[in-house]
Length: 534
Image (cartoon, rainbow, N blue to C red):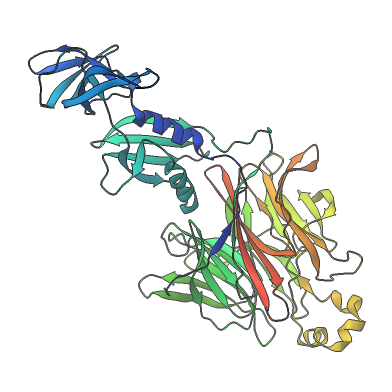
């Protein structure tokens, strides 16, 4: 891999509260520990009034103090406390309902009843994570830094393990001497106040990138538990590592690219990390797509298959990632059904998806949104209305636009030349029909929420004008034979050209690609945006 160059970021807070406040508060209070007193002394051990409810546990060390005369304020006469002399240490041995026994670790004076026992925070702790993304780890550690009674250290006295279950619940286990001494569980710390609604709980934006990308996808490219964004322009593919604090350019894929249409990722060969599927139009104006995969042994991306006569598109079918594919004629027309792409001793076209010959692979998706056993099919038509089909029958058509993007491809060299000529300015309606727009992706999550983009055209009365004023990404649920919005992002200007979605641990993670002009001298720019939705 190439040397990583970090892109500095603007971090935009989207919530005004400390996200992990309940977690940090409970842990901090546990380590604060209550003080107690020695209630009995024998030859080899002492008895204290500390119990598990006070934060005591077998093996915990307490300091022992002898209290003496009262300390008073010299002016007001207020009693400020008592003088304390440290005279030794004890280690808790056994816990009972109302008292505990402790071994004597050290003593400078004989212990006696009513001697004070207490701890002196802060305590050094180590932190480990299970099923936590890098971004969440950073946010939790940042909030831990504000705790009074603990501090993260490389030479810890205690260990704290945070783990996240499939529903997004968080468990915090506290260890001492490799033994668990306390455990906390939080069912849903990112739950929203309004039932049935989702909200944006985290948002991160990159600084401007000096490249005009047209397509992105996100996956596990290097088997290192990081998310990587694969970003493609017409003839380039760059890899960005999503780190806790932002995006860093990590690598590139060198290939014989003539005109990249889109990039997709999926682990169809089930070897633990994703392949990269590149839809590509060759100089001969035919579809010659490719599949790449990173080889750790060779330290580079290997071409697994080339000259594939299909365009690829990712689908999220109730959290199951699939790669769809379809042929395109030399005139640029989709023909035949859409297929699932597959791997079985080699990459190949898999099963045909029935009743899809009238659809294009861009703007197509599948998923179960109504709760029955049948998968619905979704398609963004040429008027950018979202159509929903079940058993070959249309059951819904939206009255708002979905899936507009400014990017398109053209197969015919003749049409391509016309589109770039001065004649095109006089014949936009005639030539617009030859543009195959990269209609937005259709993602359906495990919770049966459909996610799509809405780009507002600059002039909706002009066909495929390619200009947009603003963008919003939203989630929609099927209720009462219609789609109801359950979440919508803030408005982005001027346009989101592509997006990708992942679902993990009860949360949805969205990556957006925004492009814009940097002005006469600035050139075309791209921006990567990350959002977490709960």
